[in-house]
Image 1 (tube, rainbow, N blue to C red):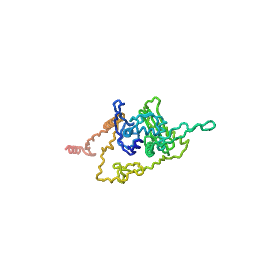
Image 2: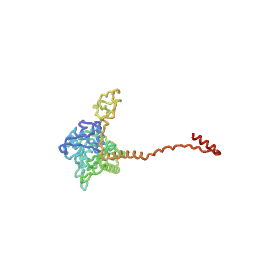
Image 3: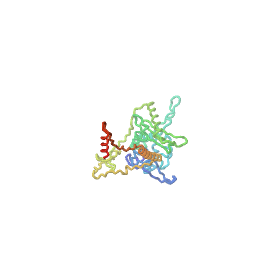
Image 4: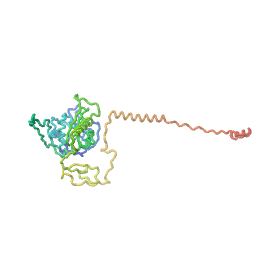
Length: 367
C-alpha cells in the first residue's frame, strides 16, 4: 500500500521473483537470503500476482525501494499500535501483533481508508437505564481511498483464485490475506466483507514448529473463517453487497513499452488506473510486423528456475530406474521366433504298381 501511495509501483508493475541476498550484520554469514514458501522462483510477475500468491521475494524488493520507515508509518495510520523496528524482514511479517490489531487495520481497508479505534465498551447504564458513559466511534480518514481500493481489489482476488480460496462465501464479496510463519508456528487469515472483519490466528503456546506442509494461513484459518462467517450471516441475515468506493479513477489499457494508450494492434496491453485528467492522451504507434522478432524458446521471461527438493529428485531417479527395468523386462519376455522346419518330399508307391515299376520310379527319383 505504501508503494502505491508513493507511486513506486502499481498493480501491473512487473517484479522479478528470483534469489537475492541482502546484507545483514545480525545474520551468521552477514547476509540474509529470503525464501519463498515453496522454495521456488517464478520469474517475472506483476505486483498484483505476487500479492495474490504470497510471493516473498517481490515483497522484500518493494519494501527495499519503498523504505521501512514509511511502511511503518502507513501501518500505524491503518491501526497498528505495536512498536515496530525498521527491519527488512518486517515486509514478511517478522513482527508479533495481536489479532485485534490486525483486525483493526484491515477494517480500515474495508472502510476505504477510514480508521476507527476499536471500542470494547460502548455504553454503561445503571439499573434504571440511565446512561453513565457513552463511547462514540471517531472516524479518521488516514489513508487515500483510491489506493486502498487497489489493495482491496487485489485482496478479493486472493480469495477468488489465490492462496485464500477456502474462505469463499457463496454469493458474497470477500477479501482477505493469508499469513504463514517459518515452520508453521503462526498461521493467519484475515478476511472481510463490506459488513464484517474477522481475524483468525492458529498456533501453539510453546511456539513449536508444525510438522506439516499443509500448516498454512490458507488452510485451517481460512476454513475457520468460512465456517464462522457462514454461521454469522445465518444468525444476522444481510443482503450481499460489494465494496463501494467513491474513487472515480479510470481503468485504461496501456502499452507496457511506451506507456501510451494501447491500440487494437498493441501486443499484451496492461490495464492501469488513473485519476481523471492524468491518463495518457496519445496512442502507442502500431508495431511494424516485419521488425517484430520471433520469440525464442530460451526467452528470459519463460526461463523459470525451479529448485528440486531432495524428495522430488529421489522420485525422479526411481522413475528413470523403473523405466530401465521395464525395458529390460520387456526384452526378456519378448517371445523368441522359432525357425521354420524344412520340407522333405517323399515319393510313395502308387496303389497297384508292380515291383518292377516301383524300382523304375526309385531310379528316376535318384537321378
